[in-house]
Length: 425
Ligand SMILES: *Cc1c(COP(=O)(O)O)cnc(C)c1O
Image (cartoon, rainbow, N blue to C red; front, top):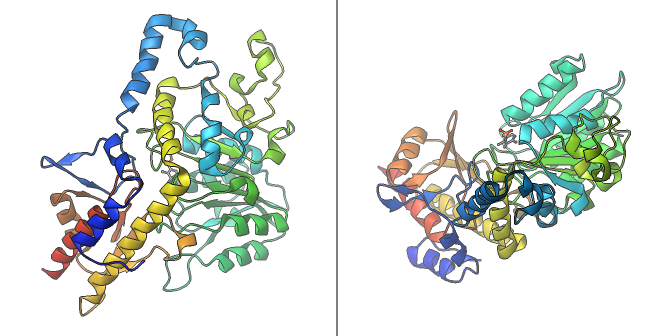
């Protein structure tokens, strides 16, 4: 598409946007009494207007039924988590039995590493992206220490080439090759939180399997953002949070995926709890853990219903909008943002902004990370004053995420005008 940097053009894109009505289903925070340009849906997605009802229904059922709500609530609590896998299977690209919603993201990453990071004397390394999200780094660090290994020896980080910001897939693959005999686990983000780079999950998985390693992914920035086919790509495991791209509320419940080939393997070590025990005999309260032969077998505790109600409200909207439509609009929004930022650079004697997110459609979602070569903090502070919520990462990166469910092309245009004005001052 031939873009134009005009309000008229942006408004035209909004007019023809098949998803334009979804914005009305969300509360848009106000700044100085005006609707903000909310570009931080990659940090905390906005609240659907339906969420309150979903949560209130559960509070009402609790008031009305007490413990009987486990069976008599409108959505009975006992099997509550079973309402998610069907909907999430479209977002994750997996079979319903490969998915369960439980716990929080970092907790789940640890639980999955208990099952899938089983270092031996020979095979003990984890290969990951440099600058992984800190919680993932701490999880890896503490896991290798837990196994009596040294972080520096066990964790191999793949870094971008000199002068580059994104990773080259071939460098990831060759790192796996290089440690072919000693790598136990290849653990990557689906989309890197800092650069917005969407990694080639299929190729990384193939390379890991070719050397006899497991491939796992943290999809915190990928779930709901990019098109995923986890099952077909044969990824071994993955986990994600629901409060960023999936709009399910602060601290919202997490989800995990485990490939079909592993789910019924009761020999896999795991940290078990009663909710993972086979349903027929769970309430016999007897000794001897027998895991449910699906991803549900990794559950520990009974489900956090209030948090799950918020998740359900959001997933119903995803269903209505369709993940393919959302991914397509997200890419168009970020393409338009790339174009606007190019225009700002082109209109200046020297480059002002370096976009560190890859441009290729298959290497990005809708987050765009801007390395500010001039006046970074000044631009960031001014954005807030002008009603734009963006995200600042040291030393000088501004991350923005125009969200297909509730942001507009006009938001992107207006954002560009503000940035340009400040940089040209
Ligand atoms: C947001 C994020 C987290 C946060 O973990 P929580 O356990 O949900 O607090 C972890 N990893 C990645 C990659 C993230 O983007």
